[in-house]
Image 1: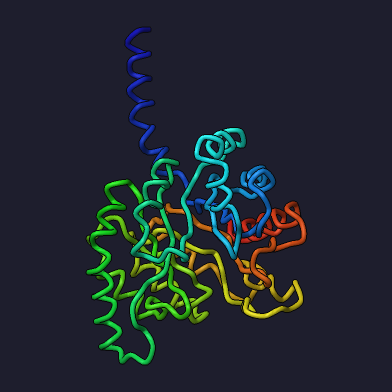
Image 2: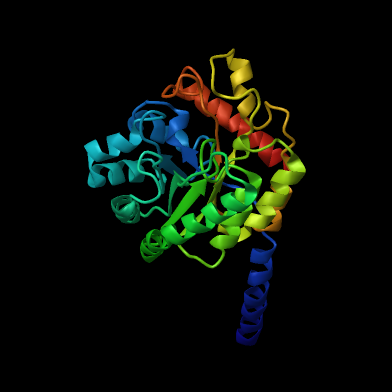
Length: 298
């Protein structure tokens, strides 16, 4: 009997890695607090798990107020709230600080157990030739090296989002940035399909090119845009399954590079600072709908 149990144990141990390897790839959902506008954390945190996310990312004004609320609450009280609702902390978005003034934010994110800060690129980008833009991206990478090193020392990644009126705006600038930071820890790319041509082949190629330098992925399409008031059903076309973008090629590319970082179902309402739907419950329901759409394509 002892020998039989011993052999059964060996068989179970041998099978365990195979079972683990066979686990299906899936998206790792995170909630952007700005999806709930300026609602307080006490109302948002109970919604995080309902929407399929495991952690929250905090946004400052004008998109949200939760980053400022963290300062008002203090780390201890905020941590207790996360624990109460069994929610993890992912990081923050700090466009207001820019990429070169994140030293204190990195320390705070580390203290809370987070892993990233999203911000924009910096430098001249208007009216540049392709050669000049490539040189500007290389210069930006060089300037970011000490900041990336500080982030890496603290277990944090600075995610540079591609954004309009930003050095990192075009597909080429994204490729050059990815190449420049390939072996540089502490810095990556927060990829926003919304700000790029809605060409699925192009977007999938960019995902594969960025590969392991993807800090965060926004499940966010352009639809009819987010820069002017419009009927809610049209504004919601930024959300997966509402707009015309075919998400299958993008998900296939994410799976091909084994992306396990955070994915945020995302959009911007107009005006900024309001929830994407009139109430927290309705906002959560819309996030769940988008999540179900993406999951159905896996």
